[in-house]
Image (cartoon, rainbow, N blue to C red; front, side, top):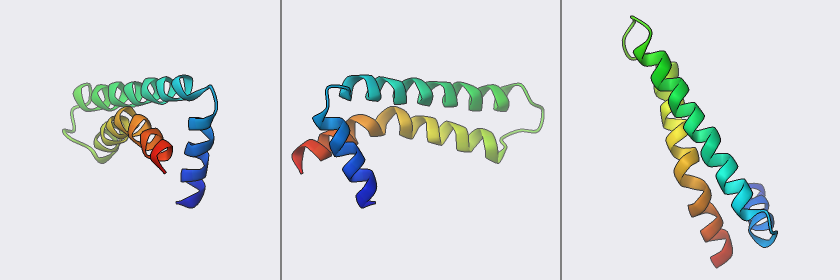
Length: 74
């Protein structure tokens, strides 16, 4: 956990903060789209993989800005 906070602090101090946040958001949106696509276009109902992709996508969309804000406060 300390390594993740150090990496977030390094990104927060650099000028690439906005680029990293938007890159993670785009990856999160792609994960959500992939999860929804797997869920909607297969006939087996709600599977573990699509649900996991959707949850990871939501976390990637929301977490970068929160993590970087916490790193700036610390």
